[in-house]
Each structure stands twice: as C-alpha cells, then as structure tokens.
Length: 401
Image 1 (spheres, rainbow, N blue to C red):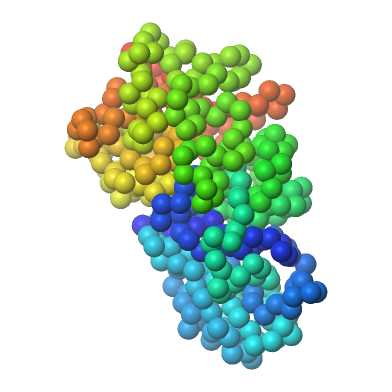
Image 2 (cartoon, helix red, strand yellow):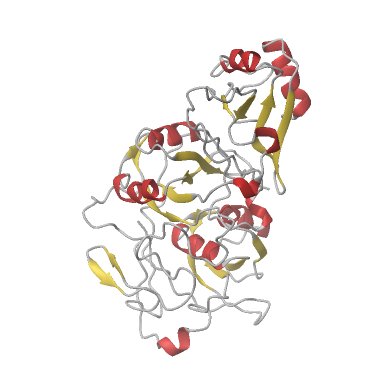
C-alpha cells in the first residue's frame, strides 16, 4: 500500500489547523496529501505556544521513538501524537507538546539537524490552530492545485518553499511517491487557504522551474468539508466536466476544443449522456495496461485522487477499472494521469461504465488533456511527456504532453 499521507501542513500563525482526517475517510480532495508547513516565524506573541509540528517521518517512527528522540536531543519529556492514515499507517507528521513555551522554542532550534538513529533531519515548525487537539470542523476552506512534471530531485520542502515565496497563504505540499521504491512519481499537490492565491498560482506558476524542470499546473479539488458535490472552490474555467452536466468548451492549444465529444470522432451526444456526462458516474476506464500490473498496484497509482470503491483488472484484457466515491476525483484522475507510465506502458484513460451495473467497460475514448493556458509558453515534456499518440476507431486521441 502506498504511503501517501493526508495533505496536512501547518499554516502560519493564526491559520487553520492541519487536517488530521485522512482523505481516505471520504472527504473529497484530488489529493491525498502529507505535509510540509510554511515558516511561521515563531510563536504568536499573544498566545505562547508549547506544541511543535514535526514532519517527514519514516513509516516506522512511532510515539515512543519520537519521545526518545526529544529526551536525548533536547532533554525534554514530551507528549507526542503521530497522525495516521487509515490505509498506510503513519501519515508522515506528528505534533509534539512541550511542558513550557521556552522548552518548545529551544527544541525548535533542532530544525535541520539529524534525527538520532535515523537517516532523516528534523523538520520542525510551530503547530497552530489546535495541535494535539485539532478539531476538523474549525478549519476554513482550502484550495488546491495539481503540480506535474516534477523531477526526482524535488522534495516537498523544495516545492512548498517555492510557492510560499510568492503566495502567503500557501499551506502545504505533497509529492506522491511509489509505495515500493519511495521515489517520486513526478506529481503532487499544493494547498492554499486563499482562493485568490490559488487562482494566481494557476497562471503565474505555469511553466516555472522547480528544480530542473518547468512545472505543469492545473486545478485540483480542495479538501473542504462543505464541498461534496464535485464543484471545487477556485474552479478554474474550462476544467472538464466538473460536477456533472454537459462538458464545457475550453481554449486548448490555441483553439476551441469542445470537451466531452468534440474532436474525437462521430459521437452522437445523445449516446454520451450515460457514462461521460452522468454526474453519478465515478468509474475510470484504464486502457493499455501491461499484463503484470496487479489491482493493488493500480489502486496505489490512483488513490491520491480520492477514496476508491473498487479496482478491477479483467484477466487478459489489457485494461482495468477504478471506481471512486466522488465524481470529481475520477475527473481529476482522468485528466492528470492521461498517458502516465504504469508498468511498461503509458495508460489511456476515459470514463467507464460501472462494473456494478454492466460488468464491462465502455470502448476507449481519450479524455482531453489539462488546459494549456494562453500566453504561457509550452515546455519540454517531463515524465508525462513524450508519450505515444493514440489513434483509435473514433479518431486520433490527444497527444500526451
């Protein structure tokens, strides 16, 4: 199972508290995220703090280990709460409570130094908004973006620092990793507490270098308790088929592309109303799978987008199905994972029919790629680019970028 934590950074002073409810519980983000906090600049002067956030934990690090670390490194007896993902266990961060503000402040000086008996360094910051007793219902709305084409040299700290330098409300970042190797999968998510910053980031950070590659930016569904119907806060114009209904046209590669059926052959719109525009359909068809990909492995590639109901790979068919709880999670998966390498091939994604209803999938019909924002220069393909151009009986599919 993949160790992808809930997206739970520590905001700056006075901001919303980190999310302790794993995304897998059914709360609908496109991003199952672990966390790196923005610099908070120290404890609030009118509210002495005694709790630190500690991130980038190894999966095996538990409360007893962390207590021992601070006992040996700071000579302090502390209380520890490790936040856990219901699927993967350790979510990658914890809260450490000290007996006094002064002892917490001294422990904060360990930030960046080696953690005893491990290969990690301390990643410490002030916890805010609740710490060990965080209440999820007290948090405000959150706004997320998807970040693709990340190089292997980029870690969460680098990613979140890049955005925090431009956007004060940037709260945290998560880079999705392979369950077995721990290596970056080349994409992640960044969260904001201000919708204006999220919207600016969609435009201003498109093509900006992070590490050695320019980033590919698009919308992601925020983790917000009030958003249960697939309509994300900060919905950026043209994101395909958000929340059901008829697909909306958008500008793509300099021309008007009618999403949903335009440009992909002779589709009769009346025949598309089921799997492609039915707001209740949450099943993704995954084509082009190599024969040795397992259902658990396929699930690990998609679980970062939302809670999954089931994963099915029919024997010998070279395809599979992933059914999500929420439609917007399926939409994000189709648009962000189009052409992504799984096994030894790049997958082709489309809407499928629920196997609970029909037992079979629909013929492959490529989903449009994420929008290319006008005025932003195109960039050389990263790990998503250079993929094949998929022809099919319905006409040519999109060129994977």
